[in-house]
Length: 481
Image 1 (tube, rainbow, N blue to C red):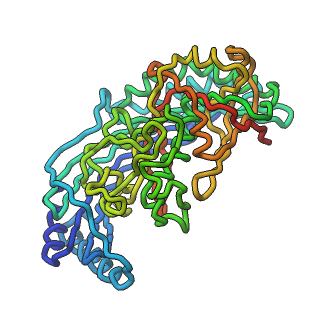
Image 2: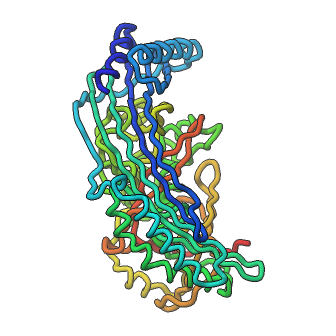
Image 3: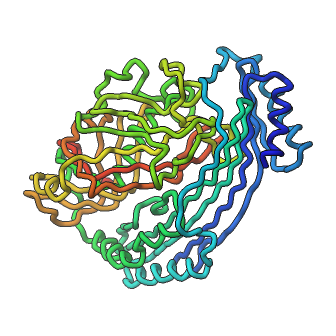
């Protein structure tokens, strides 16, 4: 593959471009789904193609193709150069890439069991077993369970001399039970909502999720929600569990810290950010307990790789340090705007046919020092929420409202009865500044986000957010529906 890709590099050098690269990607995706005792999805597909990116006199050009011959690679490279020349006619400010060393390397997601070597029959057997348990109550009207696996094999060459081969592997599974009675509908999911849990690694992840062992509990909680009281309204202390806190991190810290969004490049489609560059190093994003770290080296992370799609080596850095805004998600194009001489390596593309853009890296809330039992025990009047159900946040990532599948009242340090339709709302910096306790490392978990959308045309990216449950004081709790 490197020999094929070298053709694009030779063409680019011949035309004296500022920079060029080619990413050849072979991707295999497998998915299995069961719904109400029947197979709902079953696919196993492979794609192979390449994208050529060219920077010519400060302007970008990009072209992609799936015809794997030297002649077609040459045509695609020439097309990318022609697009760059046309783009230059409309260019306002020339692009200047930050310096990066060249690398010759191989990197692979660590795994124990290749999920593609596990028989589909074995996977379906587990999904049908989970489905059977979920439907052992007449009030469960819909039960859905799924598994999905992705392997991306990438060969990346640049005019700077990098030759990087990577194999990225992810595994995911989850299920949900929908209970219905007298016009009331309630859902419980496991291990998390929006498709379940996904992490970097092999089939061993499926074996650690205890899918079948948790199915009865999930079913009974879905049924119990039908007759549970509504979540109370008012200002209360809020304890957020790991799955919901992951989405809170994603929406109110991850997206606001994407530097292209901060600079207005996403404003017409995905919005901008309140976390503007003059705030870097001085703005109090959260309380001193809040440390949010981006990490492309994190074991199990969906954004974990040896290198990003700018051929920048993986790094770890603070976005928020002791409550202060301390960094952004950057690529080689924009990092110089904030005075940095090197990209943080947050540039990725969805497959071979899309141009790389700035994306959220794995971003985690660092654990505190408080055991979860003590955090709970110190809460006099609060609500514990988990498993996201809905989300809404404004164009600048300031005002938000989230809904969860379930919540439990906390009274005088004890977790009490289940309540339904819980929601909470807030303003991002005020909310994070109200954080007064974070559970310790024993409660810390990594949660996958496998469906983050961005860009025009739209691209999907995956990343992880780690967290322990955390407590936020005097949050506005409401009722949905």
